[in-house]
Length: 249
Image (cartoon, rainbow, N blue to C red):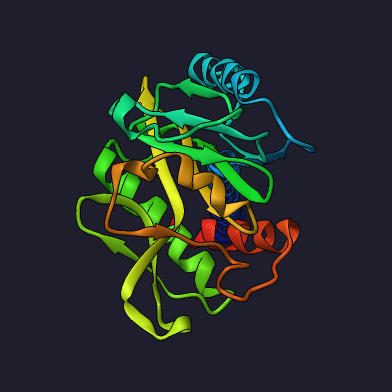
């Protein structure tokens, strides 16, 4: 074999090896990118006022599809017709004067709360088995998401020990000792897939909360964007929520 023939064979082998490595690298990058795309939830908005019972049935149907692998993760965006919902810790003594507003017991954690027009409800249906199987962390992350979203509108939200949700000190009315809830939180996790979620008050009828002891808490009121002097649309909140969701989840 001549030197030229040997050089040619060596060159071809080198080129072939480079092509193999490039292909393997491309496949690896594609796999990483593909998994990244799959992990991004689809945001699904339900227009108009949704009946709570029908919405819960829809949520369970979506949960089963995710569990069986026929659907990816979702975040449902809803606005409910007026309703009081009670979680697994709800007691009748916290129902004060519900009037004509219907009440429903539900499977989420927590106690009584009110849903109605002017309140944005987010129900993330996430597969924690492909994220992190940690319920406390998930709740903490939900609160972090809300706090970051509120911060987009110069509202300083905070946690309270042992009381899930997000609260605001009423510095705006010169009462820093007063702390009101702006976002309620209640979740259920089955097969490591999350259900229910958070409710953020944009401009609901706050007097409706007088019919219950909200979340069983007596030493705090309820507030909203409008109550804090912030006129924000549902679309504006959704835009900020989507942006901040990516930062947390």
